[in-house]
Image 1 (tube, rainbow, N blue to C red):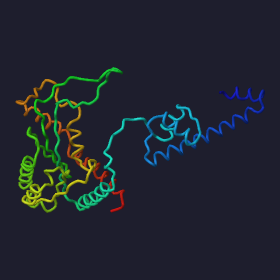
Image 2: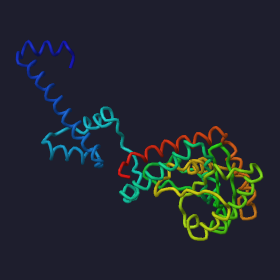
Image 3: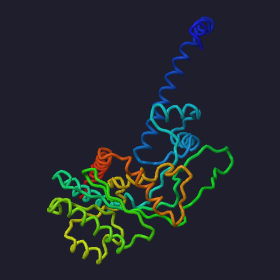
Length: 305
C-alpha cells in the first residue's frame, strides 16, 4: 500500500493508523517468537523436516498461525538456512566413546604436526568405471538413468600422501588384504630408505584402522619395518587428507570415451589415474593437510577426556 493511499484512508477512518501500528507490532512479536522457536530447534539439533511440519509445531506450541511464505523467508533470510538433501550418518558417530577417541586422536596428531613430524597418510579405494560423474540434467518425473561402460575388473588403488606434498600411488586388480598392503608398504619403505637414511626418526604413518592395519600380523610387520604408526579414530574421515585426494582422483570423467578399459587394458586405466593425480601440485596436496588439520581441531571440542 502506497503512502498516498494510507493518507487517504486515515482521513476517512481516523482509527486506521492505530490499527496499522497495532498490526505491525503484532507482526514483529510473531516474527520474534517464530525466530526464537527456530533457534531453539537448531540449538537442540531437532530436524526441521518441512515448512508444513514447522508451521504445525509453531501452531501447537505457540498458538500462532504463520503463512508458509513468511516462514520460508524467516528460515532462508533470518536464519541462513536452506532445504537440502540429508547426509545420513550412523547413530554411533557422536556416541561418547567415539567423541572421546576422536579427541584423544586429535591431540596426538596435532602434537606430531606441531613437532614437525613428516606424516604419511595411507588409504585404499577402488574404481569401477572410468566415468565417475554423478549428476546430469534429466526430465522431471522420469528416472535419470544412463548406460555407461564399466571396467571388466575393478581397479584397487593404494595411495599415500605426506605433509611435504609427496604422493605415492599403486594400482592393482586383486583385492587389498594384509599381504597386498604390506607389499605396498615394503616398496614404500624401500623407496624412502633410498631417499634418506634416518627418515624413520621423525616420520609417522597414519592409517584408518582396517583389519589388515591392526591385526597381529600387521603389528609384527610394522615392528619389522621399524616404523611408527597411528590408527585414526572412528569416523574421523575429515582428518584424513588422503580421502580428499581420492575425491579428486574420482571426480568427473577420466577418459575421452575412446580408450579401451577392458582387463587387458589395465595399463591404460592406470595411466589415466596417474595423469589425474599429476594435476595436483605439491602446494595443493599440502593444502589438503591444512583442511584436515582444521578438522582435527574441531574434534577437540569434546572436553571429557
